[in-house]
Picture 1 (cartoon, helix red, strand yellow):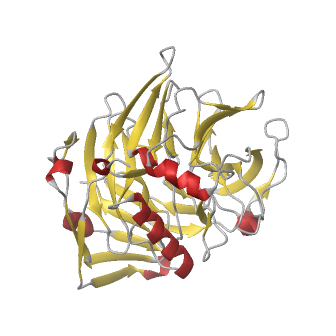
Picture 2 (cartoon, helix red, strand yellow):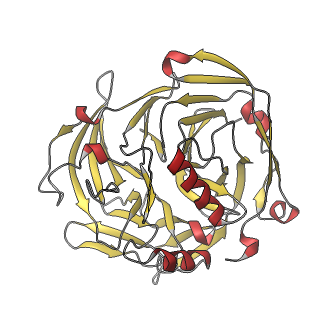
Length: 406
């Protein structure tokens, strides 16, 4: 690993909290006076290609923060276009050869963007209507081991939209590694989920995130190879060497590698431009975002150092920029160690994160949220803009954070 690819922080937590329980019945708390992490950022980070002129401080973000509590491991989060509904995942495990020993069942979550409240979707309420002409898997996953991870929307028609999500098998082998497909109907007061099919993956593929091409091609990332010995995987990752895969699926020819993705180190979050010609992949152990321009032949690949371990990527509300959730630790192994402790003993993962805005054309960076643990919300993975607020989900936390964006 290149030492200078990660900036270093000194994190101090000031104790002294005054919580105002404004909406306890909805498992929501507002912070009037807060736990305020102070982050010391060295000059080499400040001198990166960043626009920090208008970035708010941690204290400013915490001054009107709200936390929806009781929503576990909402690792990815997206708003349904044109609605007040926000969909969140609920991952139970974190990667090949590593399993959460506390939470063994994940759930879909729904949030009301206007009320800033939410609820867990009972998997037993999910209807089954397999579309055998579209998908190879025609029986649903085992709900007791369901683990909705990274996802994307597709095919929005009137008051329905499809969601494609990476999901995983349990430590005991229940359920499966696959991309599961649901249709959400939001025509009534409360949206409903219907499982309509699934796409199985190869044994060397651990699906992490999903994005859809305009023609229906399903693009998914795999952060590693489950068939590779863990020690070998770790060595490759720590060197920033190619590991994992980014593949696209069509029913006609199955999964194929995406041209230009061959050298990505731990592909994680992914988004695709509206025309399908630009693919953006978070290279977690490459500490960068990788842009694959498919308008040229061969494809053109460029990247930008993000100063941390990027996780999920999400389009901004206006579709003109990309928001990246980025883990900030001294060393990548520090994140893994904290993750293991949190999984083994419960509780939130207290590692700092930041949110960075990426220009999709130039890859120019603008900091949105500085690196910190916000209250007890750490390990932030996914951030979306909702009006003048920013919502943040986490890979290992009991809450979703909501902050003033401006």
